[in-house]
Image 1 (tube, rainbow, N blue to C red):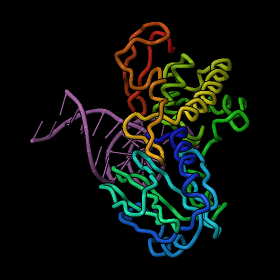
Image 2: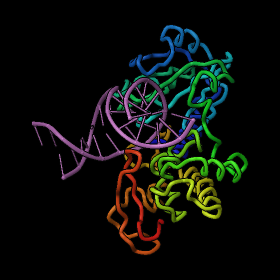
Image 3: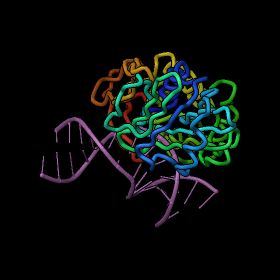
Image 4: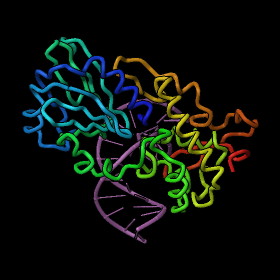
Length: 274
DNA sequence: TGAGATGTTCACAT
DNA sequence: TATGTGAACATCTC
């Protein structure tokens, strides 16, 4: 679930409690979570202070004061929460950061897909391949029209699959892919090289605007997403396509249908999305 | 009861 | 090279 807006919401929530706090101890309950050596991870992280939390696409980057960075990807169900000192691990807690101020930061992951890796700060693009090849952040200044349109022209993929590919644009997942296509009145099946300049311009605008709007709304809580303070997002109430199969399209009353594109459930309105 | 769906990325196949 | 498929895993629904 966590796509860019949800990860950004987690980042902002965690900032308040985790930044500038010293990590007193670390409990690793599910070592497979790590893409780094466990002993070394503990050795380097314990005693350090989180000086800043950044985000790149769907990755969280915990900048430590020892020139190392914890790169964290939540994948499907990874979740951070801030807990009181006496709180016991939850059923799916995989790691616990014990802070010097007495609080604990839990990392929970029901499906165990999430990963963490310790890298040299500034070197994440080299040490984490998918960060190295990742497309621009979906903001006005980074996702330029020239880049976007040229790249669409170079592929024949169904546009839905293209949007999910992080190498094209960073941070879009299944929910927001369906949403921006609905907003742009483009069928998820349309090959990207058949998208006109005008449509590309519109699609790009909708990506930038919709993701910013989702961040403002604290992300979408579709199955289980909650922010670091345990709050749900509100964006799920503002979705037009995702999760609304069988319901009428808000634009023209046509029935939204669910198909599979790139192995993913895809909801759209065949009447207005051409 | 058990098959299918859930969503992200990677490894591998074509 | 570009694109497509299945696996990693746990839980819920029908």
